[in-house]
Image 1 (cartoon, rainbow, N blue to C red):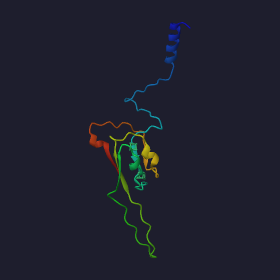
Image 2: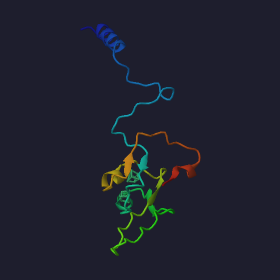
Image 3: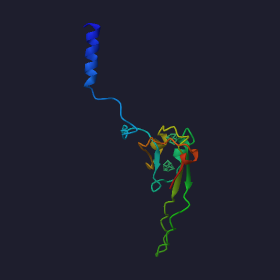
Image 4: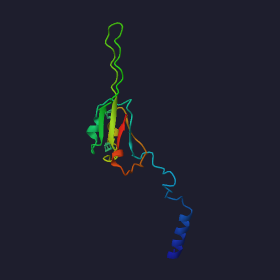
Amino acid sequence: MQKPARALFEVLGHLFKKKATSNYPFEKAVVDARFRGRIAFESDTCIGCKMCVRVCPAKAIEIILSAEQPPAPAPAADGTAPVPVKKKFDCIMSLDRCIYCSQCVDVCPKKSLISTQDFELAHTDRKTLKRHYK
Ligand code: SF4
Ligand code: SF4
């Protein structure tokens, strides 16, 4: 095929192809389901093992005892020891340090850390990038 004819064929082919770009930020961006965005934390399931802290290469996570703990269980009437209640933990995440490698998500035995699809994290005030999840 001659070069101009091939070029015309190419142009016509692209005219009818699905577009590869999006109109972001004017339209909501669609990200892949496996996208590793902001890490979210579920305090209810966290057992405070700190495996996430140990594995994080960026030292972006702190796990601390929550200021508000569930009340101590009342002693049983038959004298048996009460079942201890689970302590509550908070997570302090430094989003400005996180490299979104998802190692903390993979290592967490309770699935308390979740990779979200939230990628709009740019901010002019660095302090707001330190999030306290309760
Ligand atoms: S978030 Fe997961 S890995 Fe981190 S302390 Fe809690 S249970 Fe352990
Ligand atoms: S995604 Fe990676 S860098 Fe970010 S907090 Fe988890 S382990 Fe650390």
